[in-house]
Image (tube, rainbow, N blue to C red; front, side, top):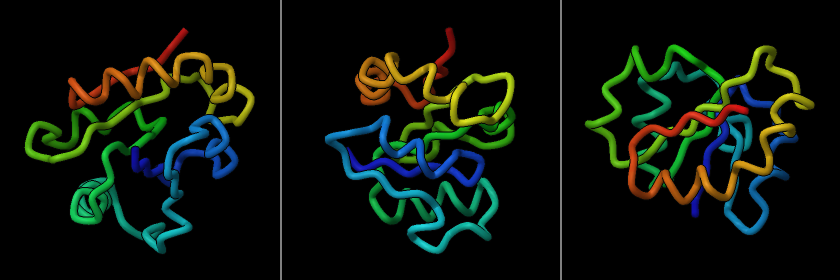
Length: 107
């Protein structure tokens, strides 16, 4: 699966997606793109999923119109330790992302 990590995700969170092709927006030079333009660029680049901690993304964008899914890590603070705490849920979230446009991961 081809996965893009949003700007708000710690780049070290790539390790949670072992066995997949994972890029951070910094890796592909899209760190200056906002949510709508970023989602369009990700779709055009054939990413399957974008992972974010942005809780407003699902309300601000028309996810149904895009050919990729969004996984939201629902954390209180955007810290690597909190994101890693949800690591056990990653396989199921990726599985659900094939069937659903939006998946929220929280404990």
